[in-house]
Length: 194
Length: 389
Image 1: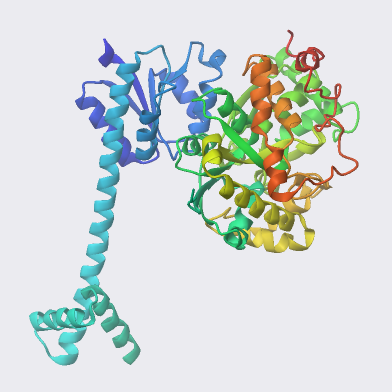
Image 2: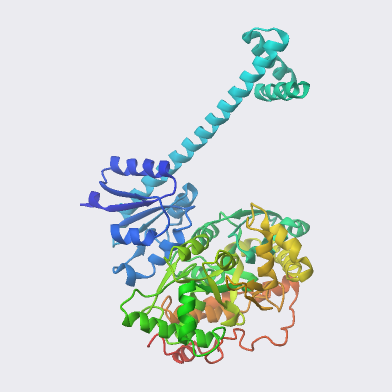
């Protein structure tokens, strides 16, 4: 049964490998293993003896796998690259997303393609999540700067919080700048007046 | 046809990316009207894939990978052209202090002679087998790499079969030193700065410069897709011209300090300029005790006609692939391999330099065995006893 395929995920990002594992499990694959450390990778892979290996493209250990797929004497069974030699669209999609897949046994190409497609969408989901997280972090930083600037204005000009914010917003509109930028200049100026 | 001068070029942080980095960071590429963005990469598979599918217009690539890609070995077949050598030589073989001591005990002469060290290795291998100890493990950087072929050629010359008597494993260069320190490997062959890093940490001895095994080995090339070269003939010439100017700059000892400072930047190699200087000068500390070995051909960039691709070198690399069963012996494949190296494009951009005196006549200069003849690879390979054929 195909759902009993042994799949190994090699990824230094624990969050991303968790997301992929979850996706594979949802799709019904039960034998999924994550490897996060990079030293002695081959020993771990030999011990697990997977049918498919999914690896993060930016992982330096990809070169290690390339060798594994050429030295069949060590793996002791026939090995092949997943992608059809002519299927450059699949390679492009996986490189764009940052994922690469290898099959170890003589698997059906269609079956592996499903797994890879799933991983590509999971990798893309992870990148979206990452950029949302980055944006959230920036927003939080901006929030803190604006709060500090409000405090400075409230104290210096004897304003309420709403009035201080209104002043920041009005100045930002007049200067065609972001509120956070104006807030930062308020903080910088107050430091200089200290 | 108007060609877009904005190029994206991938590189691995190694000293032999020097001409590529200097061409961009010193404005030599801009002087040719090129806007180059350099992208640092972590693995050769990644550089190859991104070049092959067109995310990169050009790349710093292992010379054997350019040939393997053109022949469809190990991966999708994408024809690649190498119009410029970024460097010849530059690797070294480093062994653990334990293996160094064993070799020294077994050697019947001066270990700095590669034939003496190779025979000593054969004795160590036999003794370990008699004692039922694990075989020695050697790290190298990629299946299609000069590192792989340099190690194998050297071992085999002493009577060691690299596929039977030892383990050869691929390791990413940044993990080499740690793996040696943790005794996951007993030795490795890698480019700069990793051999020096191991020596400085006291975990390794540099046994040989790879240039002691072969006088001239094509190490890294500037690689472009054949298709891209056809679509952008003018850009290609300008790109090669910028590389040529940069290589001459890098090859001049007066510029080593400036080159090292440029390469040391965090977004380039990100290692100390002093370590890069040692490589450029070809003067390396080889043992933790402080012994120094120097060679004027440790790494050749912009000197001794190093930049001009030599199809005999491509044939020689193909012969190594055949010898170690990565490729079948076939006249058509040999012709395809030789066609990867394009001295004609180099000469069109830079003119043909005269071959300096004192270079090996066969273009390789191996430390043992007959001279290489690209017209008779079968005969050349038949002269080796390992592997038994």
